[in-house]
Image 1: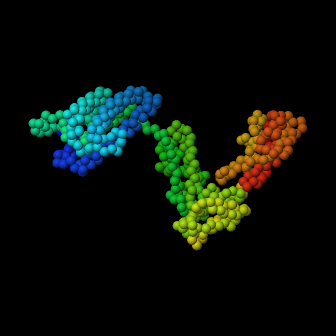
Image 2: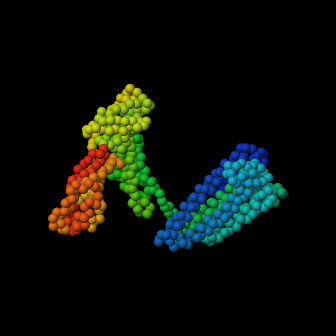
Length: 509
């Protein structure tokens, strides 16, 4: 048998010959398994080659859209597509032969896990040798080589002497063996599993040939363009459990990044420079209580569109006993809100942990879960008793800040008359408040209007609503030159307490 020059091909053919020689002695389970290992390896290699070819073909599409490479891509892409078409035709035919052999050996196509006679030496002999399917395959491989070499004359000459597909009849001594056919040499008295492995080998030959031709056609256009269509910001830390004063190292960046499209990163509100790997690294010293650090990654996607990802890195500050208390939503407690806490006794079970607070009340809502309701501003000490060992944790206690009254997007000042007249009422906005889900509702206000349209001041005191329905007649008279004042604005927030918000004045133009 004439051995090809390529080392990979030599290895496959030699392995097949060794295994075939062993078969002459005994078709043992070890030999069957050896063929299965080779077949799985070839199948995996075929999948890898397929993915490589698909990437090249996608690059062709991109180059076809680029003004710089459009002309050359239009010339060489059809040749690459023809190579893919010819290869698929032969590969599909080999898949049909594989299935035919397996079904004859007892395989059920409806059940991918069904067994078949892997050591039977008659089935492949009958189908591939006696029924002529082997010679048909050889003719198809010969025709495949001719057509691939004819796609482009120059490239064909380049690959003519080293194309991986081997259709020569292996040489053998003896009067009978000297007259044997290609199908006889490869498939006569060959166990089912060995025949399938040999077919995978020929399938690998055409896939490798396809890859070589497609790569060469693409090289005639230019370098491969791999388009990243998925971006994923990476945010992490070296630990999430620390002791007071320890440093937590935070790393943030962008997966599948380009040096021409580096992200910008802020950690805890401060910008951080990127290192040579495109990652932002910052050491953040924690305090005595658990909390979180906000990391923001801003970047542009493949199409240049700005994207943003925010990640809250939660961390736990431990003690010598291993106990900890973590504020789930904020680093302080607020009067009138349900401040959720996660409490652990470290290596002590929850049933042996008791928790108390010296300011307000604390209620348990689940294993390791508590709600704290402080009563007064200042400080609150949460004490954890874990199986007789106590740890104390200090929290600041504040009141929820006053919300900001707004009409539309405005807090007052100059505003176009038509814009003001289009608004439906007053809302109370909690700006830059980190505790989620806290709202205020405006319950009343006094309306004043002077200037153009109002010879006498238009006054509507004690409106009990957040809408402008009760003052719509006055708003209809407003126009450029009118001054509108909203005073005595009342809003109800958490706990039902009422706040008086700042006066708002609008100069319409």
